[in-house]
Image (tube, rainbow, N blue to C red; front, side, top):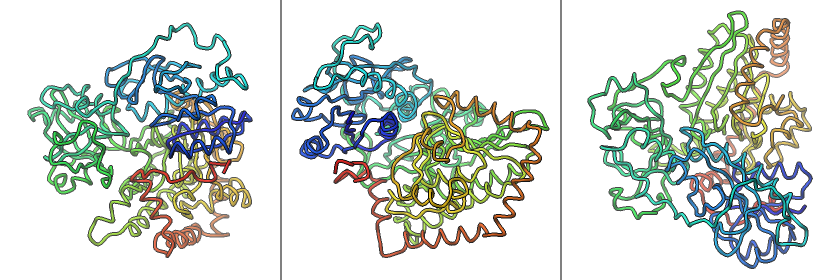
Length: 592
């Protein structure tokens, strides 16, 4: 079929559907929801049989839905209506939820249900995490089921027993969740309640609160361990107690939480904000310890070792599995939204250097649960412009050098097999960081964006000019780097970027990764394999040192950062401030 994806942005769900529908043989084009007239023009040009709306923030015009089947993906169960479906579900503590595909009509979320798919709400999951994993998986199932009901030249679905036994009743409208609904009462709210409120606002809009009497929105919260709490048991609820990495420790009635990221507000106090007030347009979401650097410096630092109990939160964690002669090391690096700042890159580099001292046969780099990595930290770089004596160009160069240091540690780790295990999506430099490992594995839900061009025609580094051609060859590498389209896991395997794809989601994938890694560590010819790896690295180094690849890449990056063409700086600015699109990129809107 000819399917037009109408979407507010080309987000992770839209990318997954885009790749999957094309793989199934459909002709797919994308139009960003900019204005009714633009949508009408796109429909006239593309003449779609079906319009699929994975992610919208406003109504589809009647001039479109009255003439063409428009299927809206709603992150709620049948009967749920309103723009804050996931927010309310998490806020209420629902244990079961779902995704509904319904037909667009005059009233939002009130059309006929074509398909739906339930899922269990993962305990402790944030809104953004639930969206990227459970919602995306359920949406794929429901969309494919809905498309089975399409009847050409008809605005009504085929009658089929595809909705299950649920009785679908007319729903009530659930309004946009306001900040007054999310407000934390530190003297009375239990830790679980505080975490639930922040989780329901994670990604956007955050929970309006204050730190050090400075209004800000809270994101990225984690429970503190009982061991941490013991040292601060007499502190008052709401008190900021300590720091660790990007996060500040704050006391609750019955415990404490780590607050990893905040966005400052332009209001004097949270109470002055309108109930649905959006974050200030010129304020960035940054690490809490960066935003409140002076106040944080006066707090005690609570560092923890890489090897520790699971309840003790930090960005990095290392574990080992298996017998002494077939040992697997497992390194998690859970960086918020997959962005890696200069500080985070240095921490990961140091962790890899420490891992070298461990006696293991296989090292698994597991990244984070939501993202493996998305490369350099664009918000941090943008913030550098406001620091005296610094600049976005300087911060970009420092960050890319720090990313290169991490990749170099992997490329030169020749005494064991390295595996990049993609539990979540990877983009730009994060993709090429993964390719520095010997093996790259992913699961069916993973989407890769192995290119830099969408960020103002960046050239890219992370030794991609070495690691990509050694996998897929020079010609295929040049072709890939000129593209700007996402790759599903199946696409990535076919093109040689992934060595294997297995498992439907992150949980069963992680279990299978450990099984495979343990088997790999116990293989009879592991010694021969490592000898071949070391010999190949020595041969490659003799032909062209890694330092030369890095130097050539950074020369091109220097032009991106400091040259006359401001494309990178403009694209980064638009990205971090979520500037509305003026047009749909032509590589997506093929009808144009």
